[in-house]
Length: 299
Image (cartoon, rainbow, N blue to C red):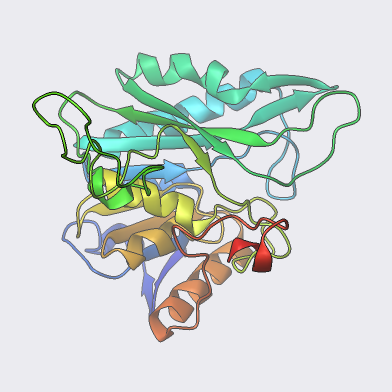
């Protein structure tokens, strides 16, 4: 019999459980195939679906297949994600490149027709830039991935203020015209734009686990804060070690996640426990990126 574990409890026979029929405040984390998990979810429940699927590179947690087979598999998962997505919700799909004999295929480009065929609208192609990774010898070293932000329609949840960043010239004022002397920018800060710089999770990152490609929590926090409200449901269908779950819980959202690797799911549960006891280490939003040219790296 399959089982589904909640923080502090073990629920048997999830098909008959009431978890998916009423609002809950505990995270729902399970070691299960995402299509099987989503079968039990009602239509339109998730305000935010955010994930980073396998890139078909043959890493430890995935079996490499042909690109066509990979896209067919992704299409099935994306279709179910769209079904469970709230009418005012957002779907954020973070991917890099598929590599075959040194040739790269940008996965967001080949996945684009699948999302469009579902009737979704692309709001932003967010570039996530990071400083560290493998060094290439026959091409430039890759230092970015993309997050494609899709919505079902034009009426979607969007909150800019919680994710504003400091203005370059916070005290700048109009020097002429009817607003002379008044602040020319928003005193709360500026729009962070569609290029985001966050450190990726490598060996010296405070969030590092055994997962080779985990989300930094602060990246998902920005999506959670801007695209959902408190008590909204957030779902990661390729949960890994639960970074999206952590980001959702940190901001009073209801978190759902699944993964097929038992070790990752166990770590996700342990991270939730540590979050609740105050033991979990995460890199805080807004912390400057380490710069060796500055005293103490700028920290």
